[in-house]
View 1 (cartoon, rainbow, N blue to C red):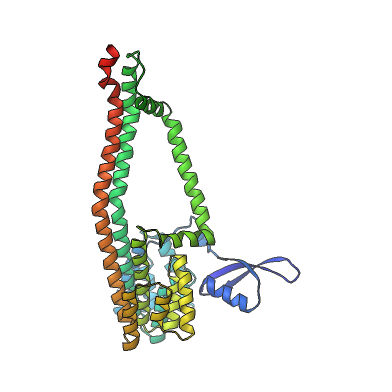
View 2 (cartoon, rainbow, N blue to C red):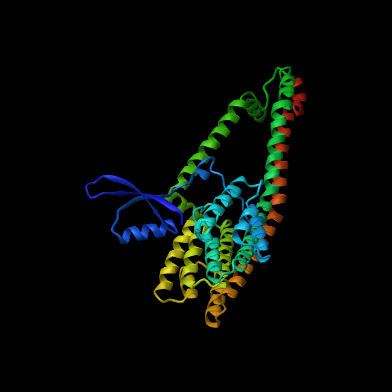
Length: 399
């Protein structure tokens, strides 16, 4: 399991630092509260592998590795042989080092799931749950194949979101490049021409010339201010309160919530469908799904769902009561509970949410592209008109 360090206070008032293993930070806090321990802070202990450079494993690398491991297991190879072959990954040195360490632990008798649990930044709770299911049944290939389907859908969804941002980012880059060329090379030539007018320049042209004269200072101020603002925002969102406020706002901002909420619903439904189809009990599946949530505000509401289910309430009613799923999805889940096909209903819910998200992205891009082109043209056109204003009024200057 992951190792956590936590700060507590001794009976004589001294601050102590202790270590403990737990499935998650929330579970550790609950255990310590039951023991009557006053916790001042909890953080995940980073191993030496990850403390150097803070590298992460890309989902695409994990997808390829998991596919390779599943194929080798189906071919009848033993787990140590599979790990030995799969650990040769020059495209992902971090993942390669992790698999080699896991191989050494497996050779000494450590369960595969327990060895993977020491690297929570590589293997999520769903992966660990899949491994435990395979270890119970004696067949690792089937649960890994189900996780492979989940990971493939996750990577594909993230790729669609990333691709939607490529075109706007490209237009912004082109706009910055064109304006940079105008201010750096074109405007100084016009300035030399304007000095021969011996007349006052139009106000907009004077403002533009002022920007050219102080371009380095203005650019430095904008870049420095932007970086400082971004650093402050990142530091604020690194706190529990700041992250909670941002995640909550993302679910409420009129335009943004149209994309965030379907994504969260898809993430939750896909996780639960994968866990339940692998034979994981509902309560355990809910806890694993909670840890997989990236949105803190969503996870906080899901905590209340888990408590309501543990108290005997139906999952569909708990999800609908906390407004975590739309009414149509709640009805599907209710049907799944009644028919014993809950994992199938979660699969349908995930597919519907992803289809809705993809359609919204496509509609948004069909609007964003012409809007960006229009704004880019207006901005560049305005700069050019302002540059040529003195020439347009040249006849007035001569008179």
